[in-house]
Length: 316
Image 1 (cartoon, rainbow, N blue to C red):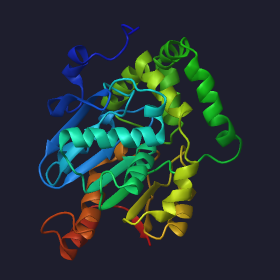
Image 2: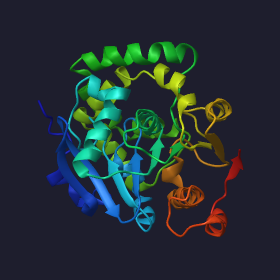
Image 3: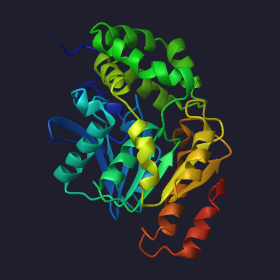
């Protein structure tokens, strides 16, 4: 049964980031919330676990100058409807994104994913749906956690997810400012007041919390980790030096074993680096899109000019 604390578009749209770009449609078995802005080559943005399309709030306007930006809420997250356990799994999410793009009749050529969103895009690319030309992973969670954390992560999430009381309990706990602030700080990032308020609203929604727990419970990256070396498109692994959620060394290790991958180090930022300095990540995406020949009229000289907008270090 829906809770009065769950998100409600009629109530929440008034101050939701980029609300004029929002639309709702049915695809597969879900009612999706997706934001679409701009014109040009289609760019798909996928947020991470526990977030929503609001995570890209500071980037949409800048990217929309060059791209048709497509930023959905993942199943069970934000304003997108709840999904089955399969629909919350990695292959299920990838299938759902494919169904959404079919319903929109949009074929993205570039994908940018944060954390678990990068894993979904990688699965989409491996499955050829959509047929992306390049993929950018922002602090991507592409391989299983190491050690004890990896062995406990999914079983613990399953235990929490099957208890119908858990989402409401966690939502009440996370709605407390001190508990929420500790959660954000644990990522190595700090976010602005608007983003913090949206995250608190998400965390206070039992339905959103249930979707997050369900995703964690059904997440298995072992097959993806085995398949990643089979990627045939360019993969850029962007790793922030202060990320406390996904160790930056994972990106370095992946770059060494995926033939099409390269590493871009950010000497600043935590797990939510794209929210900390969105303008710099926009410049990075534009530079890489120019290098890949995705942006019309952007050649090597344009890419060189865009590179000056960033404080990053590339490692090939």
